Image 1 (tube, one colour):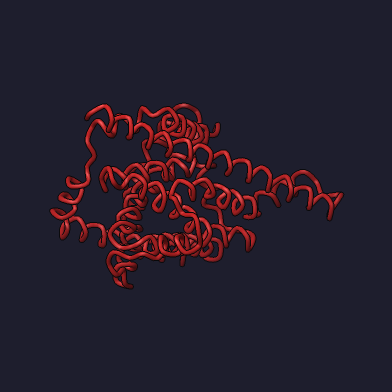
Image 2 (image 1 turned 60 degrees about the vertical axis):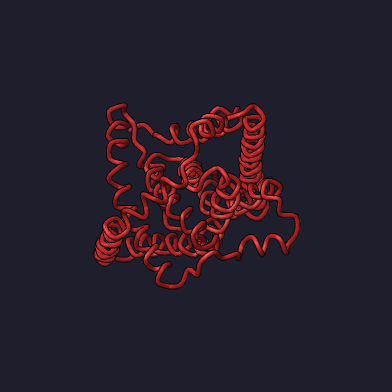
Amino acid sequence: MDPSEQKMCRQAFSRLGWTLVVSQFFMLAAAWGGDALYARWLLWHWPDIDATTLALRLSDSGVPLILSAFFGLLPCFWLGGISCIRDFSEFLLQEKRHGGAVIVIFSLLLVLGLQNIASILTIPFEAIANLLGGSFYDAYASATAVPQTPSMLFYSVLFAPFCEELLYRGFVLRYLQPYGNTFAILFAAILFGLMHGNITQLPMALLCGVLFGYLALAYSLRTSMIVHTLTNLVAETVNWLSTANEIVAGRVNEALFAFGLIAFFLCIFQRYKPIMQYIQAGRARKEIIKLLLTSPPIALLIFYLAFLTGVSITPI
């Protein structure tokens, strides 16, 4: 790699890194601000509310999370060069191949299969945490709890998938695509996995992030958004069923996991060679990977997200 190309890559990765760092700052500030404003509103309407009820109301509300996701996207519009509504609509709706109902349904089943694989991968992490006197279960239970308010349900099923796909597949993946499809898909998936903030969700989010990235590149960003939304909808439906009828929820879970594993193995056995060819064709050069990972803002971002993931452990 000649010096001029190296300089251009450093500048590009620095721009990406600082944009994502600012995005994280905006998300954090918006979440804190949303919590503070909602707390003031609750105290104004119910002056005698106790601290426990106040904390419960705050944790059940999806408004701070909605604000956080929205403001976190703002720096990325500059990164993506989207300056008007027309550019945004074209960016969102552009389609490479038609992703019909069959692709969406099969992809949803494939996600369920990946979740089975991911659930096995989380076992060693929890075992290590237990040996150290801790557990990741509380963080996982909190992240996967049944929404108690309409705002939290709206965030979990609709707003979060839209914003996450726009950020990680729309902006990050699209920005890195010139350096290789596989490279772009994998790095966006790693950030997506770390963003969830707990070890038990990391493998699942990483694997699903790879699938969502492929769908965004091979079909459209809209296709990945639809599959992501349906994934969250199925998860919330099963969670709700588990509170209403554990036996029915267990049977539904077993059926979904069985179909998911069938879809996963069908994909592996039927499409193994094309998958490997796609991976090989989209690999980035080692120099590119090194420049990305040694970029100060990228390293800072990864360290910050990894730290949040690591501290999700709680004593037992």
